[in-house]
Length: 489
Image 1 (cartoon, helix red, strand yellow):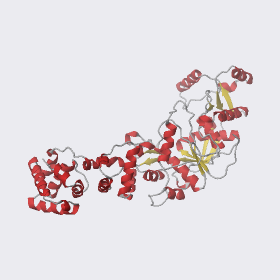
Image 2 (cartoon, rainbow, N blue to C red):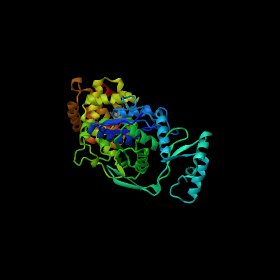
Image 3 (cartoon, rainbow, N blue to C red):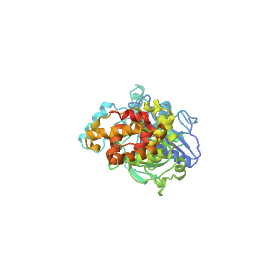
Image 4 (tube, rainbow, N blue to C red):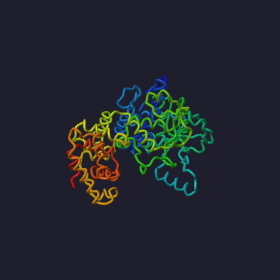
């Protein structure tokens, strides 16, 4: 593949198929897409599968699926048209070897024939000496050309290492963090090509970004220490380096540590399985490091693309993932849907994630009425079954559950018996929320009950819960026959 001249902005996301895609990766992907779209450019997906020790066979498909599930697409990459593929690194091994050998020829890299045993001993010795970071001792850099050729001829296993200049200032400008400088003395002679023929991340990412014409690299701040190695590689090849923009990483709110399963979902798929709506998730992710400088909090993707600016990205290492804020935002998106739209979302979610719904025994008209009653309390779709199960199956309720409201079992039974008898007299035509509300309050006066005493006793006995939609809405939807059946003692 020859070098190509590109026009316009080109950003990329390069997932590694080593497991589930993290929610923070979706945030970074969103920013890369927004920047490319805003500037009329192209967004590329590239699969970086060179870490064979952590490779998970079906992870690539899962990653691409979850990216699509979040509503995103790519202009070039796997399953898409593109002139600069293949877009899977394991299919580009000859390219990496070619460029690694070019660096050796230019004296910017060298062969290393040290065994893993020698390297382990070297690390052990350096650790005992108390060094802050172990480094290769450049033993193979001292080999003569004759020794190198003999080892190559005898098929001695080797890696190719970057030859880092000594005590040199390596500087680069970051769009978010500003000017950053490292001293080369703090950088190890990084392995570029492994003995199995696979490149390390550092060589592959530089070669691929160059050949694919990437103009802007947006990634987390944890990649800042790697950037000077990339600067050296671009310099050694004589290539122009893309503009970098290092984004704040994501932490748990109130803690200086990354997201943890102890606090809830961490993978992108888990949030979807919990029943967060995609537009709400994407809206939430927009603000993980970016702020428009206004009070506006609800954004469509199109609005975000229009307003996105790297100058509005926070200059910090970590940004808080406020799970409570996400729940609040998801609730807003839920309530923006019509009842029928929300029911459609619930059914699509249940089908996709193999969730059995009790509602399958009822028709859509009934289910949409149920949705209308719990909509204000629903924060994620996963809560639908818990909030609505009593509409579909009779709960198992012991009379003792009502004692805290009625005072004792005798009074509880009296309340249930009296209301059951009175409800028997209500005609089917009058069995609606308005009439039941009016009639039930008249019964309070007739029997001398307090509202909480009577109505909470009825609520618990009918639903098995202390918190439900308004009682008379529940009675109306359950219907006369089901209500009377549940009030039998």
